[in-house]
Length: 393
Image 1 (cartoon, helix red, strand yellow):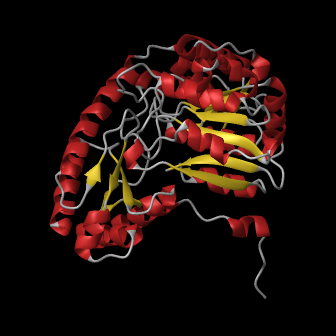
Image 2 (cartoon, rainbow, N blue to C red):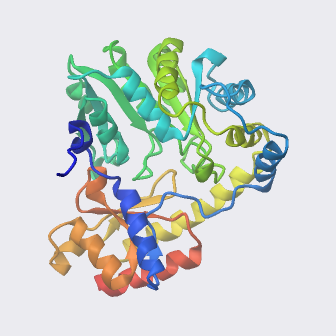
């Protein structure tokens, strides 16, 4: 007799980005020359001084349990980072360290949401936001923002989406998958809407803060709207900026009572993040930031190449981004030329005929698009584009 899993699990689907990455890896293992542009993972090694900090932690015996919510030294490094980069002041009681920013967001939703609550999510969105809301017994509510508005929502759209049941608003800037980012003025305008709805808690996902080349400096929501400080959780991590994806350290700053609740959730699930990784993350945040600038310059060069190359393909259109290492291309024209029903069929044709793995846009709430990660070498990108060109004509 088959085992029946929970209704909660049946509500959600596996991450499409992880599914594409796993399929590409399987095809490679079978001897296929697959180019994987699905994973959101820098191709750089973790900078040497951060590696050495992890090794030193092991050799010094820093391999035991820590406080559930993070070590005091890492919390202090995070406090210093928020003050230095964002002009935000937090105490240790307002900081939570988790096993990646995904874990941080999951803790937030589990600590905050009740059945019947709504989570407002701009689309295109990072694939995990809606399913996390569903796991927390809440209802995701989407605000669609297409290419015509730069993949960014307007204040009027946000106002229309908020109801008496709205409990959480998630904002990701610069955005995975589009690379779009909100200016300070745009954040102020969204903040004016949120100020009228004091029950709504805000989660700002700033993971790509330092992978940035926008026309003005990066600005976090609370930096632009300090009046929202008492109900905003500002989320970040070391995975992308420092090429530390496997180290699994995310963190946030926010209202102490909510941070305490999130820590309680974490204490009954994973307990503390890895002690070794916390030592390395402390060095990453406190140390020389030159490695971040070096990687960012490479990502900017790749961005400029891939956006231009995608726009040269028949039936493909791609807006430039302000950050991240993703290009988000509208492939509706190419789908029509090839007679394909949807973006899933288009992605299947690319992996089958071009041996290039991309993530269909429908997984991000944007059908007829595809997301390509340019966190790979320029030579790999050039090879991928030529393969796609042979398929699209």
